[in-house]
Length: 343
Image (cartoon, rainbow, N blue to C red):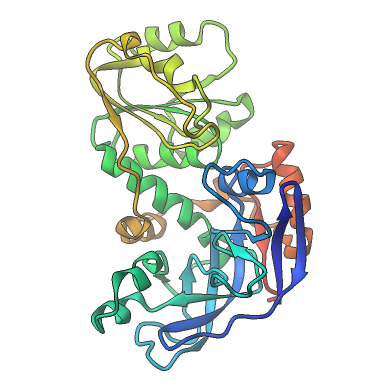
């Protein structure tokens, strides 16, 4: 099968590798589509991922697959099921590390429900709770957004964003727009986004009530004048050093801030005296599984529409994945859809 492999920093290739075979608690899936993640994917390609990586590595973590074969102890998947976060198992061969491995023609999911019921150690199944079955009528290309939506909603819920909240989001990429959509869908009274001028239309379409150009003159003063009382929550969706610190004065006393993005992971610092008073720094992460049902419900009710993030009419073939990342680096799109298997 073909898979997208980062041979070394700066070199992304599509190569033939052995297809995986399912174990007793595993299902083999044909990976239909994947969506690019500007943060994780581009950091891995560039060699700037903040955690240890051994190259070559198989890329991709926002992939949707369809079950084509099941192991003998699988009880919760059937052939034809559409499943989230399908990836190449690690290690598939001794040559490659895997960073989820979703940009491939085939991948593996585990029946973590059955493994837990049968008493297997959590270390063998806990990481596979990201594998969840989708309704049969879901479009697999659009469903690639579910991974971003689950992660960001879990983060936002854990922060405590809800009805009547005033939320400021720094960043207008796929994650920033997801935070804006979730905040609006959870009944936030104010959803303000700071981002690129080219993304304003998309941000307002998903629920942003106010939008500011991050390069605009007098940015902090203008936002402060628009909402003098300050924001209950500030989310840095990019993670550039100094980015959150610059907007910290816009947080109301007693508010909560968090850094979700990984651009300068470990290098960001806050000067707490810039704040209006005592505040909370959220550092509780996220858990995709806990928001899966919420996201499915939001999609079915029309509250989340992947077309605001993805060009579903023009997916890139797996063989053209470098063209997709070139377009992303040129900021021609928010996220790209990759057609992994020939379907």
